Image 1 (cartoon, rainbow, N blue to C red):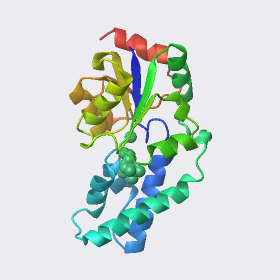
Image 2 (image 1 turned 180 degrees about the vertical axis):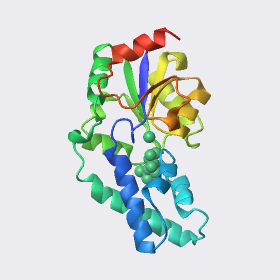
Image 3 (image 1 turned 90 degrees about the horizontal axis):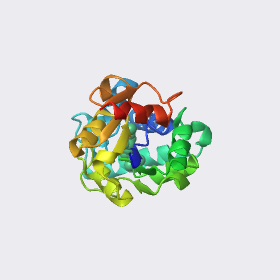
Image 4 (image 1 turned 90 degrees about the vertical axis):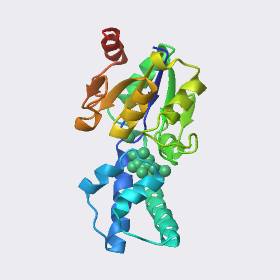
Length: 215
Ligand code: G6P
Ligand code: MG
């Protein structure tokens, strides 16, 4: 394997995913529209515009309202982001990044979020990654494979020698469409991944690489 590409929300940190949820919930409460943690599940890993569409769930609002609601949701998210620190890295992720760096394996991020760099900066992880692909890097969002291919291109790595780490259904689909090896973090949503872990706690890069030798 030459490279590892990580999704951000739900893979490197859960805190930002929680902040996305809390921001949508605040907006929903202010506007008096139904929303819940369960409903938020459908917004995971999808880009900003598509998230709004799923949030609205058929409700019609004007383009001006759309712009205002998106601006407010992002402002609420940024308020919360101020609290983020390296303590918000998910268990196991720091070790895997260190092990990859020591082994000379290239590292990239592929996130649907326009806030990916801000989150990585708060986690003090920006220096680990040769490239951060975000919502600005590719036009077609996950489950289109474009973002992952863009990151792999930047890393100068072969798709068949690259592992993608993802926690969302659309993210695993995107990586599989391109032909990457996939590690899913979670349960049912990542059932199509080559390897699955509930969490990366106590999982070493060595263990993952040994599993891929069996394929
Ligand atoms: C990630 C999150 C989504 C979020 C999307 C857009 O994929 O999992 O929940 O909606 O990014 O985030 P942004 O920061 O651009 O609003
Ligand atoms: Mg994710």
